Image (cartoon, rainbow, N blue to C red; front, side, top):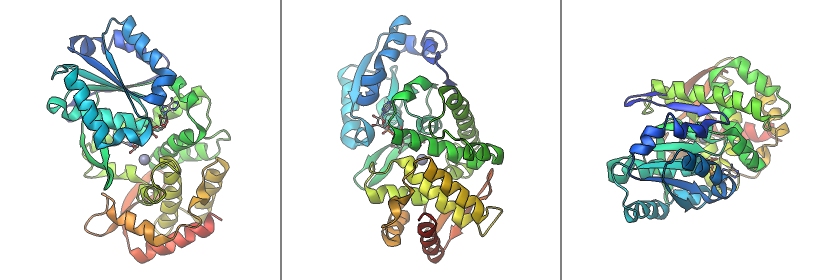
Length: 358
Ligand code: NAD
Ligand code: ZN
């Protein structure tokens, strides 16, 4: 991934933790202290794998176990992490390792970005969704007023994906991560999109196939980030499905319907909005919706949800500029664009979505 301050690598495969004794050895050995910030669920299941690799590479470290899921992204947890580092005499020359899902990566990245004005960190993601979140350097915590409201851009020193760790993910978390993979396909490539639509085992791909698909997803993310690290232009395309998706997520109170499940509904909505502009046909949207149902996504979740409360959430979205509702739409798979949509059209399209999801 090429960024303003240099580039870093994203590794995917079963042997990636061996890199602690080669590619990342210098970084970790030169650090005066190393801490792993682990989400308690991922930690309980898999921490020994990373611990074992660090021990084999003779790298001393301490472990800080943190709450699983969004609870890790609270201001209280952020402060507790900074205190942990200070109490363990960490300095400007220390290094952090994030071990967990996207939430753990976002928190650890933000702690690393701000501790002593910034120290390096490695991402060791344990969820499929993190093929998106661990790459690109966006870090954040949530505030009572909204999600990801306090954060910074802080790129990791490297990202290490070990796909066998995904086996223990609950089904809804697999669906959540695979929705972001589908998003990457829709943004990048028509043939890839078609192949996913025809995939009978989606979202439960074999480990081998999943590794290949995630690599493709990571490449899409990395290319977009390299072009527009600070989200002034093309990086906005990564918000495909997220304007309505985030509103649904907020409406249900984060967690009830997973992030990616909400994004899948949001992408169906974006396809409906896209129909009047380019080559996306109602047939294509219907195929997508059928695919989403067949893959176990709870598309019916919005059956009783009125448009107005969602509109209020959409208006609060960071991506809304001077009151205009800007959506990422598709000319066709592989060609995204941004488009301002009136409130009236948004409401009409939402009604259409509910009918088509019946
Ligand atoms: P998550 O980190 O909350 O993990 C989901 C659940 O899976 C948690 O309960 C976790 O404990 C558990 N888990 C993690 N690894 C596991 C494993 N191997 N086996 C079993 N259970 C495991 O959620 P997520 O979906 O990975 O990430 C979502 C977060 O990522 C959100 O906070 C979102 O804002 C953020 N995000 C950030 C970016 C970015 O660019 N920084 C992009 C997308 C999403
Ligand atoms: Zn997302």
